[in-house]
Length: 338
Ligand code: AHM
Ligand code: MG
Image 1 (tube, helix red, strand yellow):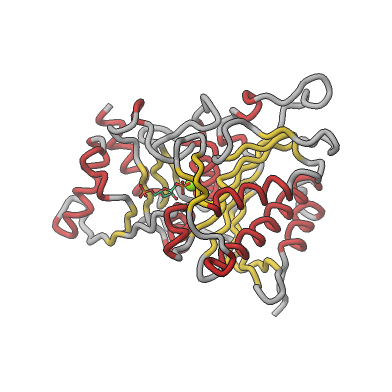
Image 2 (cartoon, rainbow, N blue to C red):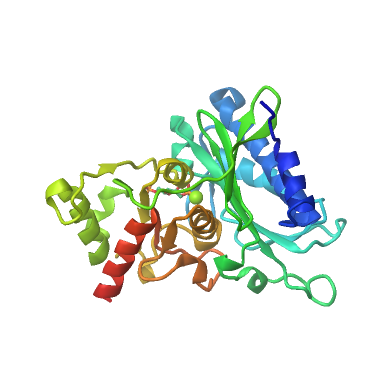
């Protein structure tokens, strides 16, 4: 069987399909290489001294794990010198990261959640990296310096998005807005090999993912939907539902890309502005592009996530994504309620 490596796949996308330019090809290669290094560190666990907390807090006031900081550093270092970026932003950094003066300024912006599912690091459950690529304004480098506002583009403008999962297998899932492909890391060769040519999410599902301990904080449309799922075959949805909650968005979304399902971290009554937990620019936008490109849907409640105009780098948003028909049902419930 001929195996297609990530390098070959990306070259073909550039050369034969015109789907990406050389800079975006290089960007994704470097991010994928950084993910290999992060995955390697994750795999060492206690032997590599990477478990436990760093003793610092990030901009959101969350305690940083050693691997959060290490993964962030790996992504910053690997992407610093390629000349394809105008700036980077990360869940773990307060402000955006300008490129070093020694490197030429590129046309893309890279945003990432370097280590998603941090609460699972020390218990050896799948975790991952999520990334999003935007285009920098044309003026950058000519007559303007990069600013935070340059990053504040709706998710529909993403040039690429992807995630890596560090689990029993190390996986990379990618989209350039023309479908979704998946690669598996051959750990002996150190190569990403194409293993899913066209990932598709089934339109219907009988599986939902939500942190049920937050039930008392949910808004009415979400309560209604989950009540209906729990009612099973006798309820209005007429089928028995199964539930999964891994507490790593990468792993929950990957399951949905593989066999369908619906993932919810909805807005709730706890936070000011009821924004929810997940971050628009590092988690919701890249995952929403991937899910839509795989035939699914992604909303914050009543509206499509990819249409949201970000107000700041670290803004949070309600997230409901996965199998199209189920997501649309929830959207209808939200619209009826508002
Ligand atoms: P993180 O980026 O700090 O790891 O937080 C995001 C994670 C998601 O991966 C996951 O869906 C969610 O937080 C789990 O939250 P909870 O522990 O409240 O269930
Ligand atoms: Mg995260």
